[in-house]
Amino acid sequence: MTRRRVVDPAGALFGLGIPLLCALVVLVLTVTWEPRLPAEVASHWSGSTPDSFASPMTGAWTMALLIALVGGGCCAIAALAQAQLMMRRYMLVTGLAVTFLMATLYVATLAAQLDVSDPATVPFPAWSLGLGMCLGVAVGWLGASMLRDYRERPSSTTTPDPSLPRGPVELPIVDEVGTGRFTTAVLALLVLVPVLIVCAVMGSWWPMAIALPSAFLILSLLRFTVRVDERGVSVRNLGASALDYDLDEIIGAKVTETRPFQDWGGWGLRIKRPNRYGLVTNTGPALVITAESGHELTITTDRAEEMAGAINTLADRRETV
Image (cartoon, rainbow, N blue to C red; front, side):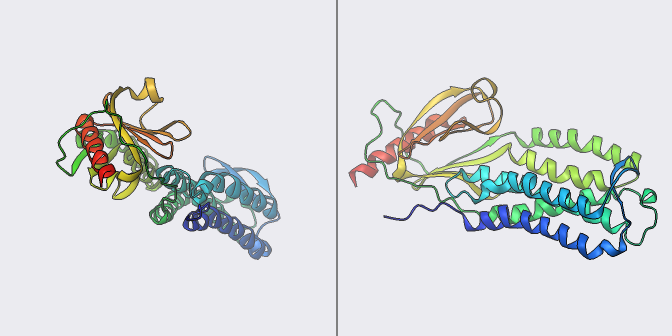
């Protein structure tokens, strides 16, 4: 019997280690630079003008705690090997984006005040917001690609219920679910056009550096590829596996009608209760897969009937082998 893994090593490194390392860097840099800093450094700006000041170490400890608690708190779930893989990935990217944004902003504001006699004259380094966001998303996505699905996969000991649909098995069955290319492009424009206007008014690029990674994360939650083949069911997102269920662990598959907001409270990956997940992007037919582990996965797709029939037919064959 294989031992149940509790911690994902990559998740612990990126989700716990990096936020703590960033917090430590903030403290070490402040101690190193303190002789070159004013007795009180600017800690808050109103527009481009500092309006609040604090001792360097007070600001450093405050920021270190925020990085560890807020940034680390967001992405700590990446270390939990049994948690849902796609959720772990997105929380890791989001948490590290917050972590690097805060750390980069703090380091930039501190560096701008080195050897300055009057911190009230130091302008706000707005560029650091964009740089921090881009760094965080890049490191987060690298870490997310290294996470693995360690959830337990007990094999089913029963055949699918006779009342469940059956059908011809012509594999693979592949469907692109979620927003179409045109809708995705329109949503992207709705986000980017106002940001371009803000960039033009401010005469700076940094709002775009924040908007692009944010739009990338949001829009990536709206398009998925669902595949049914002889191995089972898999869902891919941005070229990486998001969800997958082996044929051996599937008890059965059925078809239902679902509504994202009324039934699930929104679009995208949803969790209604422990072990009940929904990948809901449209109103209409949905494939519902039940696994021996107690997991239930609902996927909205126009090919739900075809997929359910193929899965149950394959599962019938599996039991006779």
